[in-house]
Image (cartoon, rainbow, N blue to C red; front, side):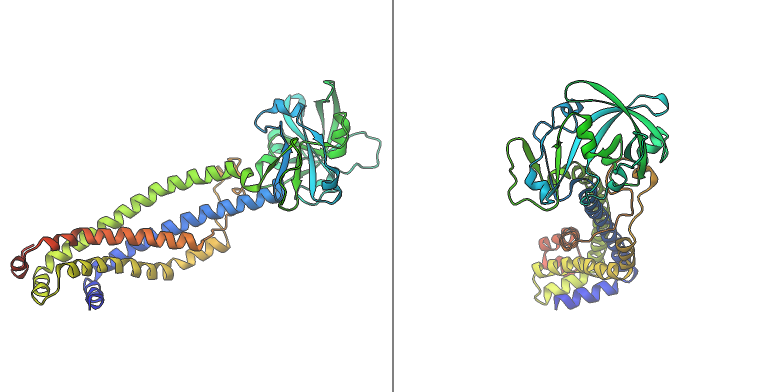
Length: 389
C-alpha cells in the first residue's frame, strides 16, 4: 500500500517531480561520466606505460634513482644471462650525456636498448648499424624532444659522455628515426642508441641498469644487486596524479549532491504542507506515524529510481560515445608530460563504480526525504486531523 501511495503522489506532483528527476539525472550523469573518464585515463596510462616503458614489471639496479642523475655513473651490473638468453627480459643501460644541437649544450639521458628487441614498442630496428664508413651512431629520439631542440630526421648531432673510468669522449649521432610515443618519460631529454654500442662507449660488457620483463615474475628476487618493481609500483606517480584529480572531482560531486538534496528537501516540505489533512486522515485510519514517515522517504527514494531510468535512456548515448570513441584531452593538458593524455581516453564504467555511485546518491536522496518527514513523528493526531503541521 505504501508503495502504491508513493507512486501516485509522485506522478500527482506533475512538473515538480519531473524537475527533481532531471536534477538527480544530471547529478548521476556527471558523477558516472567523470569517474569513468578518470578510470579510463588510469587504464590508458597503464597500457601505454606497459607497452612502451615497463613491460610486465622490471628490475632496476639497487643504486639507481631516476630522480638523481648522479646515481647513473655507478648504477649498472652484469645482466643475468639466463634471463636474456630465454627472452624473459630486455636489458637497458642508462648513462648521463650532453648533446650540442646548433651549438647549444643540452643535457640528456642516454639509454642503450638492444636493436633486436620486440618487447617494447620503441622502434629499435632503426638502431641497427648501416654498412657505411661514416662512423655515425644511429639514434632515436621522441617527437617532443626533436621539436624542443629543433632537429629533424636524418640530421647529425654531436654527443658527449663519460665512461666508467671517468674519461670523456664524443661521437656524432645520426637521428635515424623520430618516434611518436604517448609516454613522455621515454621522450623528454632521452636519446636511445643500441645496447651493445653504449656498453662499448662506457667501456663495459653486457651491463645494464634496468631489466624489462616480458611476464610477471613468480620469484621477484635475483640477488641483492637488483630490486624488483611491479607495474603497480611503476604507476604510483601517475596513479597519485589521477587520484588528486579524482579528489577535485569529488568537490564538484558534493556540490551537485547538495543541490539535489535541496531540491528534494524543498519538494518534500511543500508536499507535507499541502497534504496536512491527508496525513491526519491516514493517522486517524490507523496508519502509524512511522509508516507515514517511511511513505515520504520512499517517495523521495523513488525520485532516485526514476532518475536512474531517465539517465539510462538519455545518458546512455553519451556514455557509449565516450566509451567507444573516447574523450580528446585539450591541447593545454595533453602537453603536461603525463602518460595517457596524448590520445583519446576511452571512458571505463566499472560495475563497482556504478553501484557505489547509485548507493551514494540513493542514500543522500533518502536522507533529504526523511529529514522533513521526521517532523510528522512529533505531531499529535488532533493537530494532524485539523491540518496543523
